Amino acid sequence: MARMQSSQLKTISQDTNYAILQKTYSIWICMGTDIPVSSRGTITKYEMEKKDILGNVRVPKEHYDLMSAYILRLGEGDTDQQTMGMLQTLFIDKIPVAEKLERLAEKYKIPMTEEFKEEVADMCSFSAAMEERGMKKGQEQGRSQMKRELVLEMLKEKESYEKIMKYTKLSYEDIKAIEEEADSSR
Image 1 (cartoon, one colour):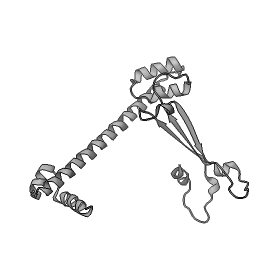
Image 2 (cartoon, one colour):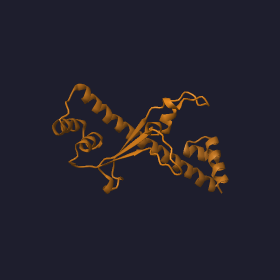
Image 3 (cartoon, one colour):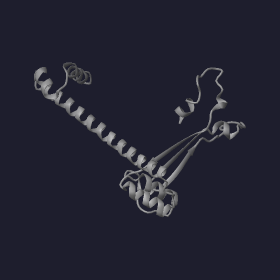
Image 4 (tube, one colour):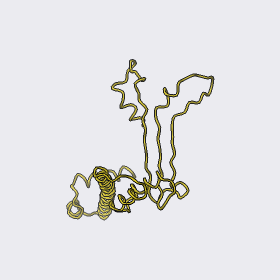
């Protein structure tokens, strides 16, 4: 949120006009089984608050209340709370797009325009793409760590650089960098 605030200012100097700052909002949608059961289905608002510690200064709230964050912790399953139920329907990825649209139309009475259907489909494919991207990144990091460990083990066994390059598909420079990093951490 601080970055969102500072991006509103072109440059910062002694002449900066902070009065131009507009309030920023950050909305975090948390979902998954790592949310404690007692916290699922909750929405929390965090905002700036003025508290005089020594003395009393009159400052209008709009001068300091420039950031608000909302954290939505989705649960799974039915809920009596309409907004949370609708959000769960939209964001829980286990539900196919067609079923989401049907549920949104029937249970939450949302009109199914073509534009809305496309937006829901786009949102669902975006979240799937982000998940796939995260999986690929994790796999790449795992492969990189395995190669690093293999290089270190082969160096410990006094294997030649040529042999290490052949089995790891790493360059001489990469192998040397791994070796130097390992030496410097000892």
